View 1 (cartoon, helix red, strand yellow):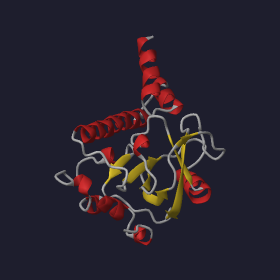
View 2 (cartoon, helix red, strand yellow; view 1 turned 90 degrees about the horizontal axis):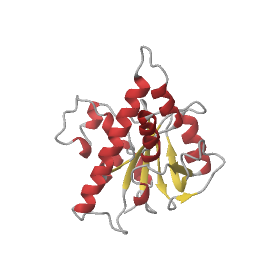
View 3 (cartoon, one colour; view 1 turned 90 degrees about the vertical axis):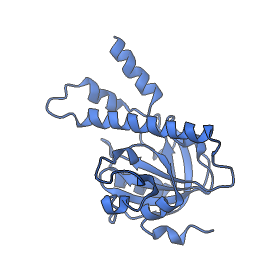
View 4 (cartoon, one colour; view 1 turned 180 degrees about the vertical axis):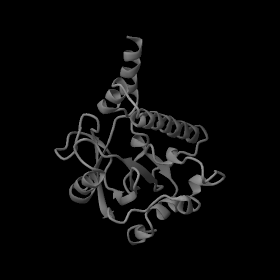
Length: 215
């Protein structure tokens, strides 16, 4: 019973889905990928939360006038692929949705830029944030109970067939990997929504952002 209560707490406190909980409860057999993936995402979320706390403590919180840059992971589920999700929400509806516990949700501002990482594939799109997140339902958002915070985007660029692969060469160009071993696991970088530098955004967008970022 205590273990079940702990799972319930994870569901409430973190960006954990119903499918994640089922993956833990079902016999894993010879594959533990779902459980490992869940553990990695929880660790990444905690890391991002701690980074945000440190920024606040050190009084380097982003001011209302400064533009921010974000990287957010997108995963396939039983209903749609990442490409379908990005095409539908970002490409057609010009929106995106965050969960209650998505790191950075409360820090999004108009004019920020965000790029979208397709798990196991690469960065496949970027856009400019055009509204603050609002808690509401949208007919195109799957699992809207999990992702109720909707915000508009504009000037979206999709390159689903030509993703920006985050390989060792590209990672060597990123501020986020300075003083890190490039050959070690880097899943922490793409497991949870995080703030990135302008330089890293430009690298991850493959130079295609030049047409929309104005100084």
